[in-house]
Image 1: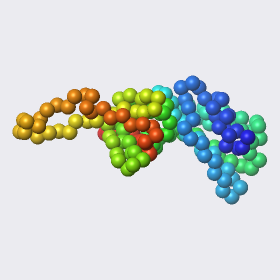
Image 2: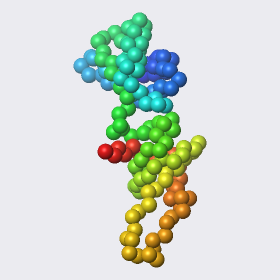
Image 3: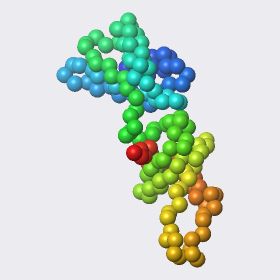
Length: 163
C-alpha cells in the first residue's frame, strides 16, 4: 500500500458517519512532506470537527511512524469556492443554486432540485418577461423548467453564493 492509500485508509477509519473525505493530496518539497485533507459533511462541517480529525490523524501518523522526516498536516473543509467532486456533496446542497459546466462547454444554472443515481435535476429560474407583451407572458410549467444533467456530462459544478 502506498503512502496516499495508507493515509486515505486512516482518515476513512476515523471519520464519523456524517463526514466524508473529498480530497487528499501529498506534496513533497525540500524533504518535507505536506498532507492536505479536504473534508465535507452531510450537514456541513465545523472548524472543531476539522481540528478533531487533524488531531486524530496526526496521532496515528506519529504512532505508526508513517513519515521519517518532518511533515505538515492540513485538514480543512472543501470551502464554498471549491467545485463539487462527489455525488454525496450534491445531496447536501439540494435547494442551493448551482452553476454546472458540461463537458461540451455549455453552462446551466438553477436550483438543485434532486439527485438521482446517475444525474442531478436543476430547476431553472424563469426569465422576467416584459409585462406589456401579454401574448408572450405565459408562465412556464414547473416540469418545463426542470433540467436533468447526467454526472457523466458534468465537467465542474460550483455552488453560487448570493448575498
